[in-house]
Image 1 (cartoon, rainbow, N blue to C red):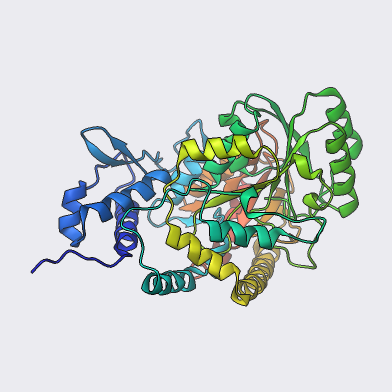
Image 2 (image 1 turned 45 degrees about the horizontal axis):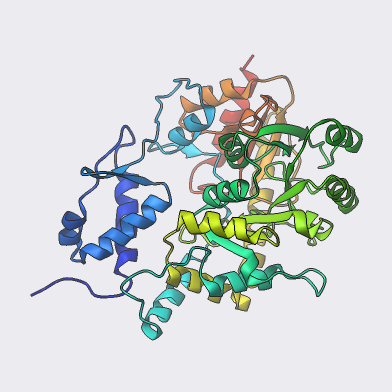
Length: 464
């Protein structure tokens, strides 16, 4: 009996199988994956199904294809405890992947509450009513229904609205940012960023050969506006990258009047504003003002991802930009992302229901509950080793040691106890924030977090 599976969603099962295969493989080195035919025979699916699943993983950067050799996992450096690598970020990620590690450094709000099951249920329902074409459609800018749903969600009024053709969807945040910087001719330019700044953004700017000027946030989430204006007057800034609501990873919210002033200065100098909206929905109090409420609409690009609020089954990144359509279309057309149309349709269906907004409300409540829970542990077991300020949103605390402390040394000390933290210097290209760390509250709460906080405090106390 022919056991080839003909369900239009067989590729999803193959994709999930490969993800588990990759994640459970030994972390050291590169590993060869089964050939297309081997995997098809093993799982009882067609070769075209395995090929499509591999293509999705390749677009996500998890694997690479070698001509005449097959598919291989990408090298993920893994370090032994207390081994010091020049690249601290790689060391943090590699250590967090080791079995038995307690990662206090995670950045995944949807760990607390995801929409993955409803998303897959909608996708299966769509498959029953609209069978998928055997050949994936070429949708270089993303599926039309999802683009329209995003445009609708970001529209605020008749004076502040978006159209579907101003939305572009790609495999992940890295991809859409890279294409946007290239399309807008910003590679090799100068950018202003808030500091501390997301490591993902700093890496992306570095990859685009962009010189970064960091402007620090104070404890209240405010810039020194005089110093910022001075930078704008004396540096050839072409791009500013700023968080939409909650400053990431600082956890603060910049006042509306400051945002309005900054946007006025940017508009006067025709500086592009890239608004980071990855945590834009995860605020705890009333919805804050966003930079895009005051920005020049022709010099504005908003970027975000779905995975922070939906989960890992929605890894796509997206940008919204009103101008330079021809340049953006050219870059996305040349990149030719191969994304699942049915998955994108399912995300669009989620956006079109009240379920998504109810999910956001529940996720915010859970984040706040876990923030309060961790704050209590920090107060109880921190032994006065760090200053604690409750964030106004997001998924982490931004902690400062009460005495000068090199958090890289604390990081290495904790590795020996199988605990991983994110030292503050990860969030600066200039080596700032060495006495700080990002501490997530999207944790594995089945572990002894109180004990981990005590170990963190002890590691800080005993560090020079």
